[in-house]
Length: 285
Image 1 (spheres, rainbow, N blue to C red):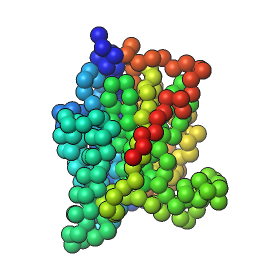
Image 2: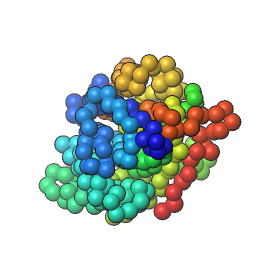
Image 3: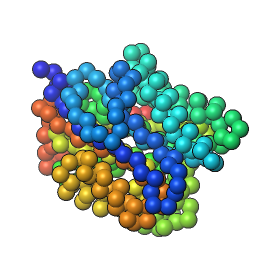
Image 4: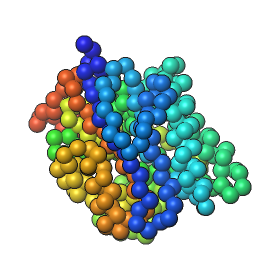
């Protein structure tokens, strides 16, 4: 039996409008990218990966009226369509990048239509292939990995306050309370070309991957996210609990989460000596 045939993924995702807003501009996608087939949302799905490549993604739209909703949905539709084709022509990393570039073009083109001027979307996407997952992020939607009780952030916000943190001009705590914390530096559809660093993670048995919009991270600190995921009996319960807590803390934005749990003899077990950072690799542009 090959390693991939012995890897299983259980996945669950849900989007919630939150406690304040009346319109949900978030979109999520769980799909078999090899065959271009979306899977049901809000249902616990579990299957062996075999030779399939799975796409998980969360997009947070922005724009007037319903333009944000259009931008996030179009981002994910364009990604899946392009990725399904590109995977037959290129390596997973190149195919993922090509799919995001195409989504950027299509959202930009659509933003010239009346009522959709300036629309755009953030994106966090994960392509699961073999015993790896490749992560891409645009804007401030995030990916996390929980391994053996340790939670690590896999993406870096492309935001104004993150740039200040990187330069040592602001602390994480100050950024969380800054009136400029929602100012992002990149968005799908808002620039002719994207700076798109990708991160690859070698998976371990028992890993839990979280993709989420800032409706979660704006309300729930990383430490509490780790606690919820560690104590949840299953990922669907963990997902529902994250959304419930985000709403209890204010729910000022739409909240979207996708969780994936990886298992099987095709994955090595985590060891105390190995850190998550040692399993990460940044793929240069």
